[in-house]
Length: 458
Image 1 (cartoon, one colour):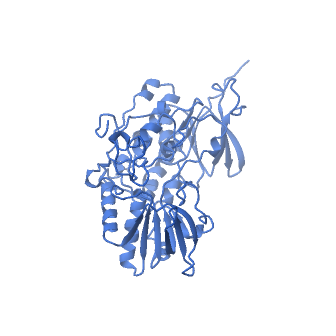
Image 2 (cartoon, rainbow, N blue to C red):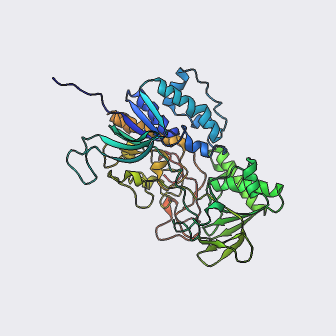
Image 3 (cartoon, helix red, strand yellow):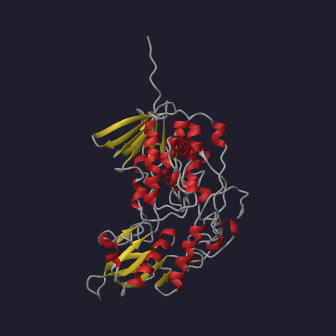
């Protein structure tokens, strides 16, 4: 006499916007799923920057499958043209979505469950025999101790929030960076919070970074400097110039993103912010000329003295340590899936238009394992929620065996209005580094994905 056991669930790592969207698509496909979240609440990473207002409106922040589930439960959809903060995104969308998912009885969401490893059941990374047929073993540290969950597929939507890039220009902490960590904030400070405001008011603050987070920080600190005498802001830019560091302005199809760049440009041009270009930090030490302040030292020997606080907004990187026992095929530069990397690599694509992508570009040598969301971008920047929603729709279709739906990817995202390769050094093009638009002044840019026919370089 034999019996058949229920199929193993899909395990989704991360209860953020993309992980919960994956769960919604799993429900649509009739696939049981378990969502594992290391934080104490859904959207823990989003809440960590909850004071920041997104530059995407509500119309682009709600997954279609999730919306159908929510609306069936009486959810009132936010005004499509409004721009929520991170906290509002979590409270008005992620929380009710979690309740709706759990109410289906087919989706579990487990908080306080940190994934520590993934492997093929009964096999380490070296074993070939029966590998593709074996389920995954997902090792987890939960509130009651360690456990192992068997999974038919794993979607890693854990993001990159917990792993910020360091201040050091070489991708490693600068000398003294760890020792003076109490003076460094990695991320956009909440200057509406009285305690945080007091921390920076009347101080000399250095800001390192050139993306949208840096723009937010510069705007906020410039406002603080106008209100609080003695507040000084020094902007450290690794590139040799800032000509295109502020995004596309009026040419950006995401209106709020373009407006943010314009405000940041005005803050810098007003003289409130001192800019140092070509400054690649290699050291951080006590300032010998001023008691209690710090000195930042650049690779070329220049230094900035009298620093009280440092804000590092240089992006994030994926944590791959707990994927050490599965077989990955990642780009050596970005740590993104190898098939996706050429579409998002700023050394190659200096404009905002690349091929659409889905499960085919995100699949790994381990059948049934996918990196999705911000994690799939590796060290590339400017991931948009719309990208992640389409990724997991395609991934879940592939897991369910609907390969036609998985291949039917339609992805058109707003253009940045920017064309400038960010993989160059000090504004000088390296050999073949001009990207699809040819050699251009180097500066970090906002990179989005769109269809090949959507304009830009094509």
